[in-house]
Amino acid sequence: MPYRCTTNGRLLTCADADGGRKSSGLRSLLRTPPHAIQQGPPWRLQGSPHRPRSRTYRDVRRGVYVPYTQGKWEGELGTDLVTIPHGPNVTVTANIAAITDSDKFFINGSNWEGILGLAYAEIARPDDSLEPFFDSLVKQTRVPNVFSLQLCGTGYPIKEGNTSASVGGSMVIGGIDPSLYVGNIWYTPIRKEWYYEVIIVKIEINEKDLKMDCKEYNYDKSIVDSGTTNLRLPKRVFDEAVKMIKAASSTEKFPDGFWLGEQLVCWQEGTTPWNIFPVISLYLMGEATNESFRITILPQQYLRPVEDIATSQDDCYKFAVSQSSTGTVMGAVIMEGFYVVFDRARKRIGFAVSTCHVHDYSRKASVDGPFYASDLEDCGYNTPQLDESALMTTAYVMAGVCALFMLPLCLMLFQWRCFRCLRRSQDDFADDISLLK
Image 1 (tube, helix red, strand yellow):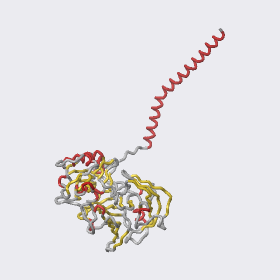
Image 2 (cartoon, one colour):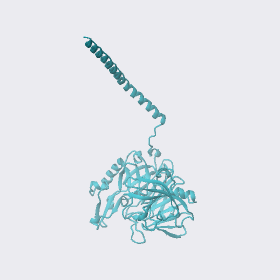
Image 3 (cartoon, one colour):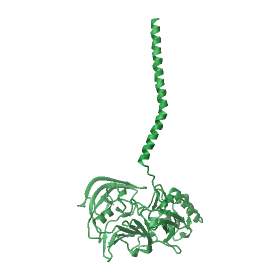
């Protein structure tokens, strides 16, 4: 039976299909790329299972260091027994990394106390021999190998209290919850089981194609990552996308630092001109041959609200599309518009319109298709793999070239040595004659 966990940023609450509900005190960042369960420094936790107080915790005496594009954390690896409130009546032995130090990783004021890694073992730390939490859960229980996420955007209020939905959402473990989405779920294959890698076949700004080689969109990979805030694009793609977004919103001028994510733009409260900003559409390869589908996000997603103390009466925003040196990352900017299904059992990721997606009077986030084009698999980027025999051949050729260059030098050195020896013997003979005289 799939079961659903929701959070309002303060408390994690889990319920089964019958509506039974139980609360857990752990506030955790759900992240689809990382590794195991990571828990923050024990001296800063409140209401969570402190590492020294857990009688079942076992230290395996291995350090863990995980750097990110921005920020890092490090700690100590161990194992512990884990149960999920109101889930299957099982206890899972899972790898736990106790975070002892972090830098620019947890957002200030987020009250996060850990991170739940949900990706594959290939990118686990300290190495791929470490079994990730979800793998342990599936192997040790009857939970199906699938989970789904609904991240609620900043424009959708939570019913209970005044907490912004930017810190709310739902995670369904073991299945899909039809109440969290509308319309159909469109699936794209998982290209490689390390990160959740997918293939983007086209990008449009206000339905205008960037007209770039589709391999550029996936250089050197394209992944879905719930732990990254921005939509991150390779530099060339980012430059072209920003150029088209600037052209579409040219009725207002923005500082260059805004497009680099370094400066904020503000309007009087309630007067943000959403209509001047374009929608962004990503086309993902579909399951059927030569088929794709399109997901479209609104400016309410890629303009992130930021509280500016100096202008607290204004609505201020940060541009949440940024350039990347490690490929395309479909972060929260993308996911907040959709209900995303990570169907690991069938190696695919599904997208449907979320019931809590942001929208304005004329536009909504959407998922639609199918669209047809040929050779879509060729859009995936393949890291060049050099054959070992080719490397050996190259090494021998280089060695031969070096030998050819060294041979004249060796001959010249030999000739010079012979000349010195001959000259010395002649000088010695001349000295002997002088002595005789």
